[in-house]
Image (cartoon, rainbow, N blue to C red; front, side, top):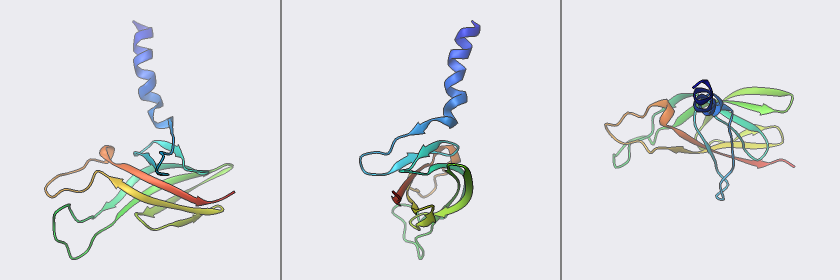
Length: 126
């Protein structure tokens, strides 16, 4: 019984440590507390700061924005940064960009932090 519980619990405990691969479209998609190598730096979204996007099908004066705090691991050191959707930031020898946030915002729906998927791209580097 103890082995069965260990076998079932281990994947849940290691869920935040899993490394995800970049898809063929060049976007690496991960959720809060998951880590991925994004063509060089390792990125971990830690906290959704803001999601003020205009809901799909609504008419808004401002398109809104999404901001997320991430930890960027660069070998011997790491940095905390706030990334805004569509705004590249200089990281090491390239730029890291939050290029996608899913799901799309819908009027009247509430999205919980664990439902978000963040898509990242890294350009540059050697």
